[in-house]
Image (cartoon, rainbow, N blue to C red; front, top):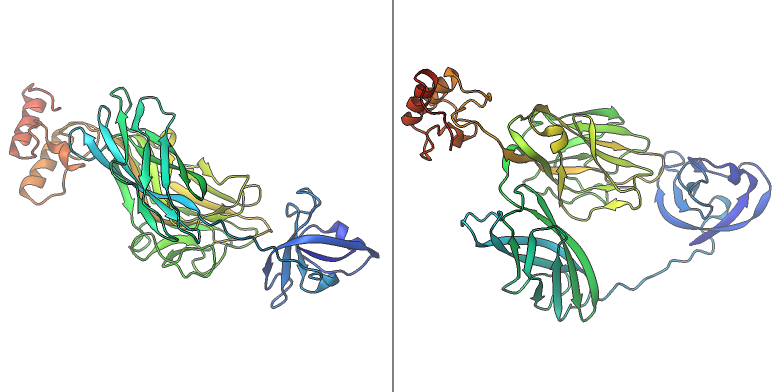
Length: 434
């Protein structure tokens, strides 16, 4: 909180670095300093970034302004509020699913049940005691039979798992495979109450594309106004950027050694991904995003030029760790031969932060295959016979996916599948399928 002298030329401020040049004195005024820019008024000429109290409609920066250091007495009578931290701050960290009843494959499926182990982290300065949490969901057919779990005391910066038997969840047989289940987590301890969310999926997904970002560009392209997309290791040039990759050493991000630029509009585009045999297609990636709320700066995801996600318009997105970002892209990717994902960043003249940071990019879905269609061209022809012969006897490529070459459904891809296909194609034999 600070005050400065207002002159008549300040009332016409729109953007850029304000310096008093003309007009008579209009009185004193108090504002809030929210940041600074070392070069906003020219190289080596810094400015304070301030929030005015005249509403978002004043100026072109949504109620904010830049004022040169020392200009008009800015900084006099400054007050720095100090808020004591909460003694305990508990938040959801991660979870683990263990199949309780079912086929033993470790994947929660319709008609099965599972236990849900949840990890909580305490970022407060004191130890959390008598910690308990309750789990709920509004999704029909997901029945939480053991909705409460206890935790040992959680010291500062410690992660603690729920005590056995954890949470228990039953999946009704009518639940559709391939859906996302969102859970609400209510946490209580002697020092306060907290809430969080988590999600997981019912059924098995097939991966059609994965890039851990460790190789070279792998077909990714980028361009735009003030394009700062970079591929490599995070350099921690901004306090809102990650200190390391989610896995390995490399990521894609906006300026790996600093913040994104003002008035920029740039994008990163994935290679072309084939999703012709997928349904319920989803995009998963590890995200570390720092961007102003969407009324100022936009962080967008497009699939084949269709907007599928945008940052919130009511609050700044300030990730402090890697998050799993999940987007349902089935409306634009299901059964498509050519799918491209575009990450875009558009900024105004106001604050600027770390931007997009992306790692471990995955496209998944529920695969629909024609059994015996070894080359995955969605048709059963002699080319599939040739493909299988090359695979079995000439070190050719695996069927796509490997199991689909099993034409006779004996759970093995061998010469009997070649014979089965020949009988179907040329001798009116039974159609492949399980």
